Image 1 (tube, protein in one colour):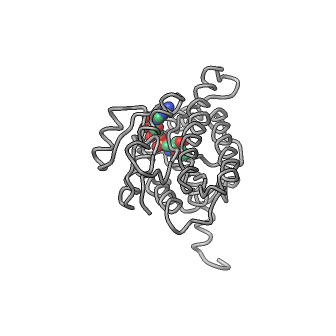
Image 2 (cartoon, rainbow, N blue to C red; image 1 turned 135 degrees about the horizontal axis):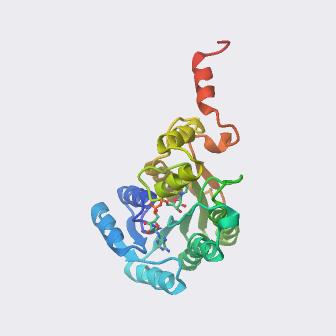
Image 3 (cartoon, helix red, strand yellow; image 1 turned 45 degrees about the vertical axis):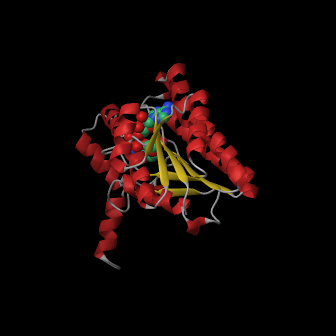
Amino acid sequence: MTGAVLVTGGAGGIGRAIARRLVTDGYAVVLADRDRAAGEAAAREIGCEFEEIDIASETSVMAGVAAIARRHERLHGAVNCAGIHMQALVVETSLADWDRIQAVNSRGTFLVCREAARLMARQGEGRIVNVVTKLGFGNPFSAAYIASKNAVWGLTQCLAIEMASSGVLVNAIAPGHVGPGTGMEAAFRAKAEKLGKSWEDFEADVVRTIPLGRWCRPEDVASGVSWLMGPETGFVTGELINITGGFQAYAAAPDADAVREAAARGPGA
Ligand SMILES: NC(=O)c1ccc[n+]([C@@H]2O[C@H](COP(=O)([O-])OP(=O)(O)OC[C@H]3O[C@@H](n4cnc5c(N)ncnc54)[C@H](O)[C@@H]3O)[C@@H](O)[C@H]2O)c1
């Protein structure tokens, strides 16, 4: 497959890995971010274009996507990876903070989806991938964030149905805990502090809930995006792909390490 692929949040930990992988796959990647300095540096390092886009601004999204359309014959893909987080109980969340999270994560993703979908409908082809998070259960201190990502999942399903007849496929990817080395590490560290845990204990507790026994890596997420962009997934739309090392299957039972040990002992042991 060829064509341009827009990756928002491309200066961040996961977005950068996605951009790098899609360049390797042969796409003309346009790495977008609101952080110009970090975005330009990431694009230079990866060898792709940079476009300054603040997804919270309708004007910025419309101008950014229009500029990409002027430079490229076809927009094959749009990956919505830009996102922000905060750690707070609902009772201590201000309206301004709630709105700030929704303005980027859900409203911003909607704006990019809308502009990309308009272009792709005219082409009769396209792939949209929305990066959400582990969904389907509560997550303390994360209501604003989780609510925003549930909104994106709802948007993904509706858009997938609306765009099916135009040949545009729309899916969501839910990464597991990718903390270390990404911007979200700060959010995990804030959560550890709120729980009164050392970072080492917090990390060990996280890994205990992951059957595959390690944190998710940005490259794991990038592999999923690569698959959804590629020629093998022409019949996949409206899906939520979990890349969580088994966490999603096992979220309610934080004893994955005990299960691994029992399984390693073998039958009847
Ligand atoms: N790291 C994790 O553990 C994890 C887990 C699940 C889901 N996610 C999701 O993956 C995505 C990337 O996370 P990450 O860990 O790489 O975070 P990150 O902070 O490293 O990267 C996010 C990027 O988005 C950019 N950004 C923020 N607001 C923007 C805006 N208004 N317009 C344009 N760009 C903006 C930031 O400048 C940054 O470069 C996010 O959507 C996040 O919710 C992360």
